[in-house]
Length: 168
Image (cartoon, rainbow, N blue to C red; front, side, top):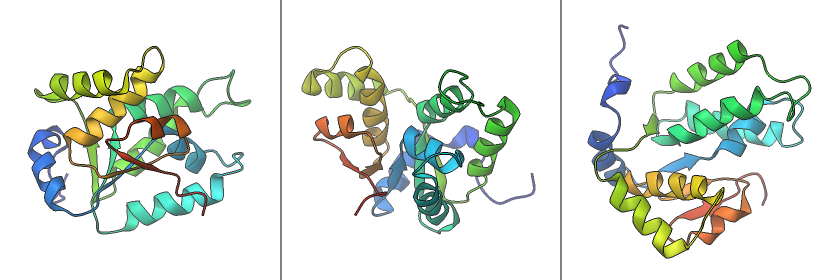
C-alpha cells in the first residue's frame, strides 16, 4: 500500500492503550454516519461538516465496527430510503472514511466479554438496546471518552459521555 500507517489487522487492543494516552478521543455512532452520507437527510450538512472535521484532523477518532455494519444495512435498505444507497456506493463511503489517517476501528478483543457483561449488568438493557450496549462497551474498552450520536437512548449509559454534535 505504500503508506506508513499500520495495517487494519493491527487495530484493536494494541491501539487501545495508545487511545487512552491520546487525550479526548471521539467515536462516531451510526446515525451521524448515515446523516453525513445521505444528502436527503435534514441533518446532512451539519453531520457532513462534523465528520469532515474529524476525518481531516490530526487527532485520533474512532468508529466501532458494529456502526459501520449498521450504516451499510440502513443506507441500502429500500424500506428506509427510497431510493436506497446502492451497495457499491455505501462500500465506497466506508472506504473513504477508512482512508482517514486518524481513524481507529473499534473491535472486540479478548477482554470484550468482561466489558460488555459489566455494561449490560449496570444498564439493565435488553432487546434492541443490546446493540447500544455493545457500542458503549467497545468505546470503553478502547479508551474512548465521548460518543457522538443523535440517539438519546445512549444517554442511559452513564459510563460513557454521549453528545449530539449537531445541536448547540
